Length: 337
Ligand code: NAD
Ligand code: UDP
Image (cartoon, rainbow, N blue to C red; front, top):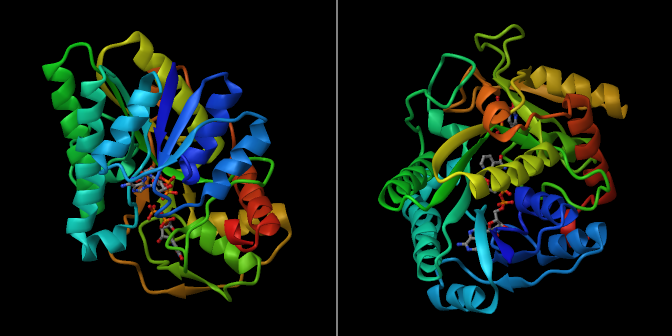
């Protein structure tokens, strides 16, 4: 019996591969490498000393996906595959709905064909939209502010409806906060192409000398130092959360949404100063205009994850930023070196 990981070569997926292989699971990877490299999977094999089948396929290619289910006894699916750039989703909503939502529909239809009734889905804290009451907990009303978020919202709703229609189906909707850091080996990590949208990859590219200065998007937010507060979570803690969700789904039917965050909030300036302190590398930065759509704060209640999954994040911001820097320093050009 194997677990199918869609989007396994991506940032979160590759770390989850390592965690699952280390826990003894058999895995199968399906990825079209639209935002990743098969080298990441080679590195996973190097870290774990274990091999696994990896298919290059788009989720929307029904025939290829069916062939994977035919070739392997899949017992559950962790569904990471998706496009994730918020700004791009505003410009290309059709591509985002097609890739993320239609891709999920094809996947779920094939799962039904083969009687596979367990899915762990990569959702996002973005489904809480413009909520202002912190910490964010799973009972809060949802609402999104961009097409990327709406694709997550729609897939969540689809899974809730599927679980209502089929009492044997298990779905865990994991709402990630801000995944950062990398595996301690420095062999796998976040590898965005072009100029990074996210804070930590921007910081590490300034540190490595590829970018000159970090723009701090606004210092007039309603927070102690004026820069926005986020719940950064180490990607290896996040990966462990998936293994815990798999165990939960194996024992429980129905649909549960669960936040994966640390419950701690750090500002942009906290990130810069912590990075400089733990790595001894300066991060030249300047205050730039606000970026549209950024909230003052976003951080997670951890109560439900602790109660249902017995999972809690263990790593702090120091670890996250030390590990993020090790990955960038060892791979200044990412997987393309
Ligand atoms: P990523 O882009 O590194 O990984 C996504 C993977 O999916 C890539 O390997 C990509 O090639 C693959 N993919 C995309 N569309 C595909 C398709 N149609 N068929 C096959 N493969 C396809 O992203 P990530 O950071 O690892 O995120 C994983 C998941 O978690 C995504 O669904 C993302 O939306 C979600 N998420 C990420 C974050 C974050 O900040 N990283 C936060 C919240 C939620
Ligand atoms: N940010 C920044 N400069 C950058 C990228 C991000 O100041 O070059 C800030 C952004 O305004 C937000 C925080 O860093 O307050 C985290 O942004 P990111 O895009 O990493 O994650 P988000 O919380 O938006 O999903």
